[in-house]
Image 1 (cartoon, rainbow, N blue to C red):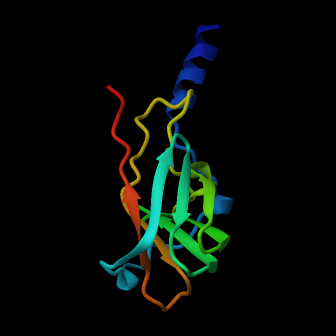
Image 2 (image 1 turned 135 degrees about the horizontal axis):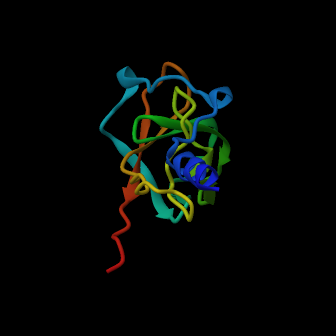
Length: 135
């Protein structure tokens, strides 16, 4: 019984990897300091993204913190979309640590969000609204 409890406790400490979901490295050479009027809010384990621009974005990759990425089919002009943070992976297949009930590590903050429209165009920065911790 003790062995089972130890195995379960150690299993909770393991990082969440899925090699089948490994992505490519962040394209550092495409990073730019400019941002467009699209606001990103973290709501628990999700991102809420409000496209306040008159432009729709199709078939793009969304980067978090210059490490985690996922593909997005469409973000229409004026639209709010919700994305699960648990759908963002890095080049090693590690999932974004969004926190949650069974996680033992502190949730990772969301600091920088960028759109990548193609492999050779500069990235488009979004406005990340930091959520202050509850006191």
